[in-house]
Image (cartoon, rainbow, N blue to C red; front, side, top):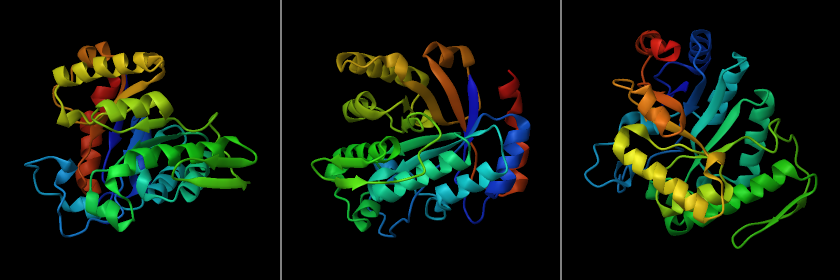
Length: 285
């Protein structure tokens, strides 16, 4: 079982360089960072789009740019993997995003895991000109366009919503054919369709579901993939934002989960670093 961490890095939290150095010397396998471009103050969409959700924490609108932060981490580490947890693909220009992903994979010597998601904050999407009703299809096409840029010398793409004329684009990713595309989602038919068609891994949020509920979703995911003609063993399962208390490694492992990502508070170094020591026995175990 691989053990990584996730954290909202902000202007008030521990900074990327120090965090990367502290994680690597303690043997953590990976670091995952979320992103939000901004949070409209209207707050029409509840946290996660869930009814009766708690107030949105301030760190959601203080996040630093995920690619800038991960590049800083990559520069001071050699072994630890770095992941976007997750990139809000619909809100990005796919040609620029393909360049950012490929560049970071090159600069990190092939250590990037490209976590993606559909997004939940409808007013945030609207400010980017995105209709939430079509975001699932839009994300699929943007990923398709990016895959073309990563894998073709003369890249082109033609979909229902996006078109790319034949183009040159370098660098190409170090990883062949590209960094693993890992879908952050609690599950459901649309998510499982995406897993079957264009993803390499699944990243459900651990603290939102109990073990039994997640076990049921893993079974549903595998059944869905088999029905779509995709081998479920091709999908690596990681559990994101898991609270470290009471982890039963054998139970998680029995589901075929290969990575747990422990949730760190968005806090200064004097809070975060002692937690890295506190959680370190989980790696050794």
